[in-house]
Image (cartoon, rainbow, N blue to C red):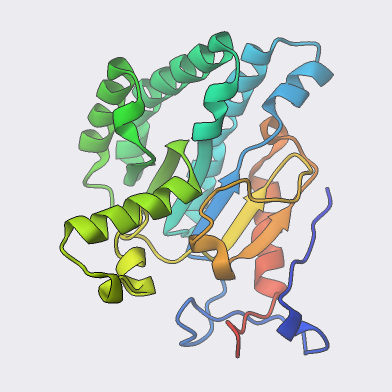
Amino acid sequence: MTSVDVRRPSDVGESAEPRTVDAQGDGPDPLPRHVAIVMDGNRRWAKLHGMSEAEGHSAGVDAIRPIVEHAADRGIAALSIYAFSRENWSRSDEEVETLFSLLEAAIRRETPDLVRQGVRVQILGRLHELPETTRASIAEALSATAGGRRMTLNVAFNYSGRSEIVDAVQRAMADGLGAADITEQAISDRLYTADVPPLDLLIRTGGEQRISNFLIWQAAYAELYFTDLLWPDFAPDTFDAAVAEFTRRSRRFGR
């Protein structure tokens, strides 16, 4: 596994003592409150193991549960996972149908356990563009887990960071805000993630070093962590390695 320490120019030459501050800069906070994961590598994992793409995606879905459980156990307040981007519609009809089928099955299978764990599920994305059966499964999960207070699980499905910002601006306009009133705070208050802590740590598996239109507003001051592991091989100990790296970084937020 490899990781890349992505620092801002102002960090160069400064002390890198193990210290973090919370998103408002109020003091020490040893753990990230909000962690996001770009779950990349299912298809490459399947090819390496002589399996079909569908089997790779199935293995990727199976890898989610232990990470959710572990994040909740670690005291993470919010976990956001990138399940399906709006750009993924360009894939073959067969692959898209497989991804939707796996999502629906996973939601129905995991909802009772998420309720037991006190995990609240939110969907980030344009739900109105999804098939009716998928929307129905999502609605049931959202309703069943609404009382969860231990951790929020954000599932980005039919999601685009740019579309999220457009949607936030349109909400601001629909709320009657004029051009001068559309501030950074006004947009932040209307993002899909408005009710969870600011993003602290963004992890990407699969060896690529980009965020691929995921939480692009929220990631402005997030720490980035990249690993060569393909998503089905990502395990709680890898999650812990990313968190440990986060605690060693010095976050100054421009100061």
